[in-house]
Length: 265
Length: 66
Image (cartoon, rainbow over all chains, first blue to last red; front, side):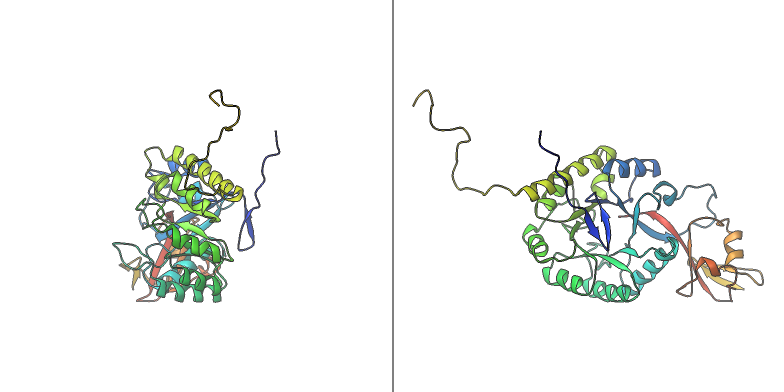
């Protein structure tokens, strides 16, 4: 048997990761399910949101960070729910304080509540400010290759276009644009948003994406832990298929079995 | 005095630091971050930062998100 293939690590802002699947922690039934799904996904980078503490809560109520430990995982605070650059920057600063000086953030600035489509004008503003302030910014954006390149030029450490709308599960709606983005990228590119099932994740990796970020497709699966495992395999399979290089597409059939030596020949 | 705490008007008695406020809310030792009037107050300064009437205080924590 040949030696097992060893991929190079994913490198984000100077840190190296073996897993190319990033997972979110939203929409799970409870923290136990969150922890089991994250574990099954093999993810090393895990996103979370920053929200007001419920005042008057039970002091013994568990905290997400008790379950997804910052010692074990690279935590990626997001700015989900922010519609202005100002709110996104505030949220990142709160996250940095929450995690004792942690610099890696996922920036998303949304345009409206119906589509949750990224507002790229505010995203660019926020990216500039965060980078000036020393943050490592992984940025959620549209599938516009010009904007993706601009975010990279401004110093984002990873660019993350949407496959389709957040939480929609519609997969990769514009693989042509996604390909344009990956072909020109000089920082890691990730498909963030829209992944609905394992084949979507595999397709993103086959396009040459460095990683994918998945939340709803796992959390809203009938069996989230099993889907987390499926996503892990899909990302690995898609990555290996990309590196292996697919066969050329042909217009006509070509038999796999040799022509010569047929009994009817 | 009155402060705005996580969006709600809240009455406080006298001279209160952020440390005192966190204690009184039962949040001591928990992973939280505090902002006063849109500026982060680092954990190391909670004991020295006194709240003033009309301050806008946000106390946040990590929750599940994508």
